[in-house]
Length: 435
Ligand SMILES: C[S@@+](CC[C@H](N)C(=O)[O-])C[C@H]1O[C@@H](n2cnc3c(N)ncnc32)[C@H](O)[C@@H]1O
Image (cartoon, rainbow, N blue to C red; front, side, top):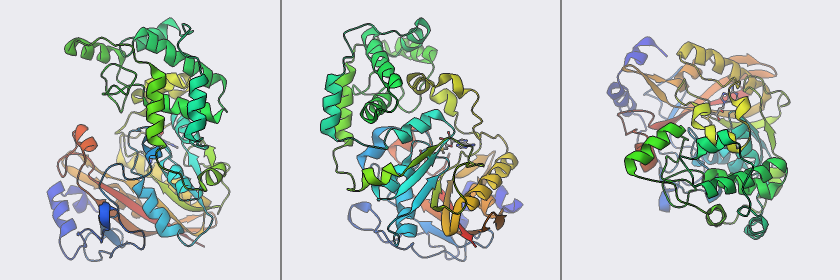
């Protein structure tokens, strides 16, 4: 990005996005706010050029919340993208193909993999975090509701005190009633002893998503839903609000949530497509085990600079999954400086280029980040790294797609509002491998 662009303020940038013939208006929509699948809307060619890459701006997918299959919303994950994003690019780039392999090298909760499977394609879910591994893998086979409720019914959770350690008990006490803690630990232990049991994994996933939150559907006293706050912070909140954790039976809450998430039928080929999935925990710059030229489409979102602390925010999930010990050593890509982020992303794009087949596309979603009063457009920073020679060909920047939308309730709860703070667009660099 040129220095002058980097120095523009948010309003200047916004003006240049809207001016000079940009296609800023939303593209055609069908009833219910969902975009008709098909080719991308018109390209904006005069305004906002980045490294001579054509730019598409508009409401490429709906800004409405929770429009896709409810199985996506089983579990929240900070910095996840909406399933509409991978759906849009899967339809756009794979509509001619009856079979294809999709990859998300920074898989998170598995949005790309799940959406690929919902569209009938297999996928590779890669993420260094064992929590993200579990979130992806636990939806590899989705048993039907009958099997799940039968299974849940047969599990004995409440009759015995669990074997929870004193230290873990003390950390959980501000969040849960004692009986609830024993039920959670009993389920946890059963799952940890049977990691390959897919019905139990799905039940454990649903339990993990119910650990803490605002409503009665969660196991905890009133707490923050998206991240696990520290026990002392929860203790202070309880004092301030005069709250004491009440007993919450976990089985009935798990069942209710499973019913909601499985209320719509899955694609008839879902389980067959998902059976072809692979789950990897490599650094995204070195995807060992993914052969050169074997991937048709990448849809991914790397960490943007040092905005999210995955380890701290997920401490309770890490405990529930028995992976706390490994969390501190994870070499997650968290960078304070733009040049470090760019060096990392250059290596990651080189690796994406290696695994893509010639003619295959990659979509890398980032945001604009604010540094002081400067806005930095990360997709432009990446576009300017290209072309890159890679094993088996060359990676070219093909297009920048900017999805602009109004902020939603969830974003507002993170103190992010349109055009004032934080990211308010999805900015995607589309790359293509040429032979
Ligand atoms: C922005 S999130 C991806 C969210 C995902 N798109 C979703 O919808 O859930 C980035 C992910 O990258 C993972 N990650 C960070 N550094 C990594 C690395 N070097 N290699 C692989 N994964 C990494 C983090 O654990 C995190 O889950």
